[in-house]
Amino acid sequence: MKRKMSKGKYLFLVFVFFVMPGITGCRYLSISHEDDIIEMPSLYKGKERLLTYHCAVIKGKIVSSDKLKNPTLLIVYPLSAADRPLTDYIVLKSTSSFTLYLSEGRYRLYTITDFNNDGIYRENEVSGVYGPPSSPKEISLRKEDLVKGVVINTSKDNSHKITFPRQLSIDEKQETVSQLTYSGQITKIYDGMFSFENASAGWWNPTAFMKAFGAHIYFMEEYDPEKIPILFVHGAEGSPQDWVYFFIRLDRSRYQPWFFYYPSGIHLSLASQLLYDELMELQGKYGFNKICIAAHSIGGLITRPLLTRYKFEKSNNFVKLYVTFATPWSGFEAADASQKLPHKSLPSWMDIGTQSVFIRRTLNAKLPRNIHYYLFYGKEDQVSEGRALDERASSDARESLGFDCDHNSILTNRIVFKKFNNILEKELSR
Image 1 (cartoon, rainbow, N blue to C red):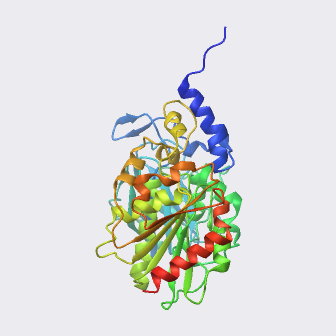
Image 2 (tube, helix red, strand yellow):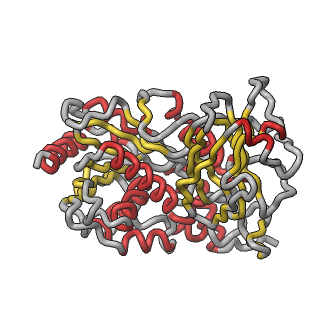
Image 3 (cartoon, rainbow, N blue to C red):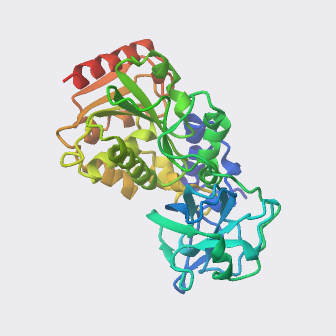
């Protein structure tokens, strides 16, 4: 006897095999264990939680008091599950910034420095810990947390003061990743870091992406105070290379292109927090007073809460222009159904449902009046379709502009770029 398929399961299968390929070119079963929302239970202050996946970020830097230059292993020690294998670690320079992407729990951070440069990290080479050596600090993480400003002071003398809490055993089967990127780094748009393979990993395996690259704003040239920054934000499974057509044609005598590169599989609210942190770091360093933000697809869902949550109409009033391209503002019904069934999933999928709290908060908040907003959409867009014209978003727009293109070709259309360029001249020349 055949069983009748439930409506929820049917919608989920539609989402996985039809909607998701439209967004990304689906490799549904390639989601890693760390990014799977139904991985093994975890403990948080003695209480069992149903879901565990990497969903929070710690940002900080390593400072060397004796000017060490040796490679340093930053190890995340889980207090909430101290008996599990050590799998969260990255290799850094002796002095370097870092980004850690972790699951909910309680942690301590240790550094092991390869003092003799033999390529092996040992317990007697502990060079630092977060907090005083005699009383290390604990970091507690919940979903979508961003803990920043963590500083670890390293020194060779610390090897006699700090004891690693257990025998150091690094899983040799797991590749040790070196994290060398930072905010404001100058690179080329065709750099291998921005390849499709890496961008795809950012969607399907954001944990691996975050270990390698973090989430940063990249420059294509030295900062020039005489030029206006145009910050481009990609969508799902995207990278700065999605914006090549715009990059080549942008008037580089007047504008400087910046690109936010992030793992699109993480919670969109977390991506928005990371973007805010990166943007404010650069604003504090360079003091620019005018910038345009241009976002494609779910990049719009990341940038809109950035502008509404952090009050850019007050002291942070340097964002003058905001343009979105083919953003699915209303979300996807199938994503709602996907959260009702046990299956492999990603944090970002929880945020793109029509009933998600993230969508509701994002669209209920009005954009600051001092930010001039333009909404671009493709008339042949079968991914965003009518979602790009959700009234809650379009009501904030000075203009809603439709073009004869689809979800992706909107970024390679001559007429689209011409209109975008005209808006730049009109809005930023004031």
